[in-house]
Length: 201
Ligand code: ADP
Image: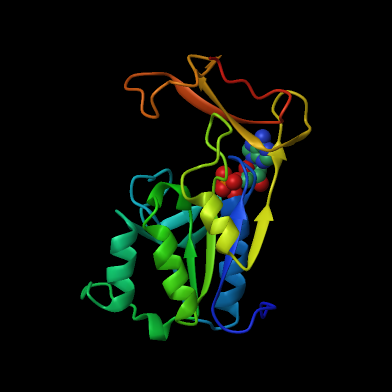
């Protein structure tokens, strides 16, 4: 249960969609709660797949979490500027962050500040976007973390370990230049291996 690192540090969990990143974050957070450690979990408010106040895995496990609009909101929450919901960082042992890639570059200095302040920070997110390109600031988080775990899903075509997220629009592989938000499009994602991941040019 005790992590092998003394004091504050950063643990990153990455992989494609359906690889169990949320499950693994929930597992680590649940163990910390059982150990009576003080835990706060955050996720971006734009993702309300299941509940506003929970992190949820595709398999249905949940942990309490606060949905916030941006990294600054996490900082305000932890420094007590957010008077309604403040949980001062001195009073926390563990901070979990899910869907980290959506927080953007501001998340990196926040995560490092928390670790410097003695907090165990567990960050889960996509390492690659639907094009299989590194996702925003995730490479920097990976580089600066004390520990990093790459999870795989199962390729929906062949059953091999999947490292990539296939974006489908109207059932067809998305194009490299397709906008990230496509209004009115029938969009879905599947886990795929390197061989079966397709990006149309
Ligand atoms: P992530 O946070 O990485 O998207 P989740 O923790 O939400 O992953 O969900 C992982 C769960 O998704 C697995 O335990 C499994 O029950 C389910 N699942 C659905 N499709 C797949 C797939 N193609 N490969 C692996 N797991 C899948």
